[in-house]
Length: 113
Length: 137
Ligand SMILES: Nc1ncnc2c1ncn2[C@@H]1O[C@H](COP(=O)(O)OP(=O)(O)O)[C@@H](O)[C@H]1O
Ligand SMILES: [Mg+2]
Image (cartoon, rainbow over all chains, first blue to last red; front, side, top):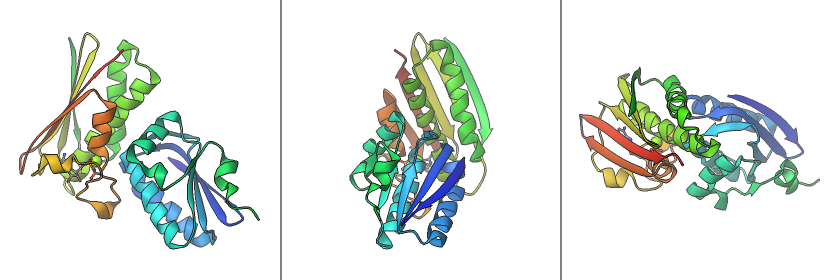
């Protein structure tokens, strides 16, 4: 599992590359939380384009970050999930609280200068 | 009938090992990418539960038994950990006994929807066994 970060105006984009499961959940969430608080960004976008596997541990990570970002008054979005990851997201109903977009531009879109 | 039985320690590294092993076992049936993802996710859920709920902070043994009969895949994942007192409650979507660990409580729901059948047997203090089947089309 590899994470890469990019800040665009008020938004931190985190790209998840590899497989997200319980084994790497703690490292992933600590790294995202650390980068989010030091970046000074308000909004968080999960870029899932290169996420090749995720189970319900990943859902816990998404919901947990959503709570932190909301508490800071920011918005959380999900971009480019595979059809497979999307199924898991829809099954859990979290697309009702974290919007899912099919391009990174749209996901960042709410944050125009 | 083709069968395999794997025994491994309940450390979290083995969550990936178990799902890759299950995927390799079913490969001769030439499953679709989606079928493979379903199987890997269901195995990941059951093994993760054995690791974090079954054995909690201790390390025990997890058993995965696989079989293929015709085009029917059967997977049974067993731990001899703490067991489940109320299986019905445990299987409720969003229920988790460990909200502090950011668990989503969706593990059983995922197993149920990604496989054709799921049955759970458990006894407190004895352990838990999860039996799943899926027909590969
Ligand atoms: N192998 C197991 N041993 C003991 N308890 C278990 C086991 N599997 C599941 N459970 C119980 O069932 C609950 C629900 O499991 P699950 O749907 O996978 O959600 P989560 O793992 O996110 O808590 C767990 O929180 C736990 O209390
Ligand atoms: Mg679980």
